[in-house]
Length: 372
Ligand SMILES: *[C@@H]1O[C@H](CO)[C@@H](O)[C@H](O)[C@H]1NC(C)=O
Ligand SMILES: *[C@@H]1O[C@H](CO)[C@@H](O)[C@H](O)[C@H]1NC(C)=O
Ligand SMILES: *[C@@H]1O[C@H](CO)[C@@H](O)[C@H](O)[C@H]1NC(C)=O
Ligand SMILES: *[C@@H]1O[C@H](CO)[C@@H](O)[C@H](O)[C@H]1NC(C)=O
Ligand SMILES: *[C@@H]1O[C@H](CO)[C@@H](O)[C@H](O)[C@H]1NC(C)=O
Ligand SMILES: *[C@@H]1O[C@H](CO)[C@@H](O)[C@H](O)[C@H]1NC(C)=O
Ligand SMILES: *[C@@H]1O[C@H](CO)[C@@H](O)[C@H](O)[C@H]1NC(C)=O
Ligand SMILES: *[C@@H]1O[C@H](CO)[C@@H](O)[C@H](O)[C@H]1NC(C)=O
Ligand SMILES: [Ca+2]
Ligand SMILES: [Ca+2]
Image (cartoon, rainbow, N blue to C red; front, side, top):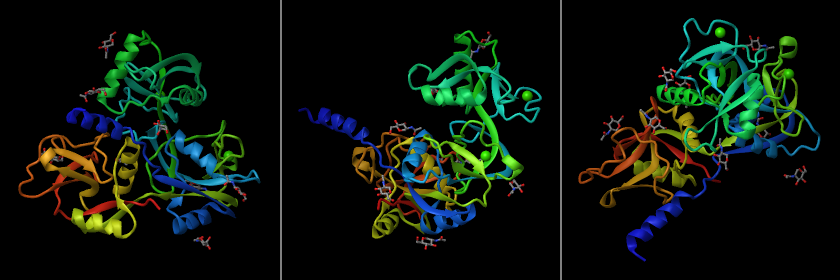
């Protein structure tokens, strides 16, 4: 076979390699208060369990091996900070409110003429838009059934992906065009925007929630902690933190090392500790990396990303080519000048948290991947 063609086929094969799980759940079948459970998880694993998406909820459910049908603590706790966020789990940085909005105690939002309006989640029944992988053109699906916000969210998650997020000007324009093209521009439609005051024990930003119907209800005004309900799907409810339940911890497979080392020293450190520098094969791993690098003491953090200068190509330490990409503008795509020094890849610890190319002698924090 032609060598180039063979190489291209090899790349295609490599790009479809499936990723390994970056977080592992551990069910602890010992009854403790929420705070005791948190202490146990932090000492023996990473923290009380966090869930970022529907995949996590099914892993969480499967991790609970419990013949006693008990309630089970996870790491979500009520705080005094109430903030707007997207149903898909992302923080809401772009908030294109209509004039005078938000103007009430409402905790969900619809879109009209490209602008957001807060609205009562349960009182009103609206049409809505789901994000979807079925519609390859727009990635959007309009649902003309009238539902309250929570039912709309469940509908999108069951049939598509989630209620739509509008994370920037670009997505706003695409959504506006979709609304125009669907001839629904006169309607109020739910989007995935909501607010609440729940926060994960591990400080991760995820706004993903999976409440059981009519939860959280803060019964008696004392229910500040979250548990898996005793039901087949193990959806979530709030309960008083002093109740004693078994719990699920999670163990992060990504570990930030807050020492300043060159890329080669960082690699040696990880390998001496039975690990490797992290490879970021997907958006999901990038999201976990972004959570971890928040605590870094350097402006960038080494990844297991290295440049083969003669071939003008970037590879992961795991041997795979870079398929999923998150380069900062000007980085990673143009040929490197490596006559002076070899280049390696790092992720910015602030800002957009994109990848940058740096000389390998820079001294940075780094992320090891723990595969044990
Ligand atoms: C960690 O696990 C050990 C063994 O199960 C247990 O004895 C210890 O109390 C745990 N740590 C905390 C803080 O609960
Ligand atoms: C859930 O897992 C499936 C297959 O494992 C994957 O295709 C999908 O992207 C995942 N969804 C999320 C939200 O991570
Ligand atoms: C669940 O736990 C029981 C005993 O505690 C054990 O025999 C069984 O193998 C476990 N099942 C799974 C799926 O881990
Ligand atoms: C529940 O959390 C809220 C907000 O942090 C706090 O004001 C309240 O005192 C807590 N209640 C209990 C019973 O812990
Ligand atoms: C807007 O998003 C589309 C689709 O994701 C993309 O092709 C386009 O380049 C983006 N435009 C800008 C200005 O970011
Ligand atoms: C949608 O239609 C309105 C008028 O009907 C127009 O002003 C607006 O520019 C259109 N927006 C998009 C994104 O096509
Ligand atoms: C977490 O949220 C803050 C603002 O709420 C934002 O600045 C930061 O980029 C978010 N981090 C991640 C990893 O999403
Ligand atoms: C790589 O990205 C950084 C951060 O955005 C930027 O300062 C630098 O100029 C970029 N490198 C090149 C070669 O454009
Ligand atoms: Ca309003
Ligand atoms: Ca409750």
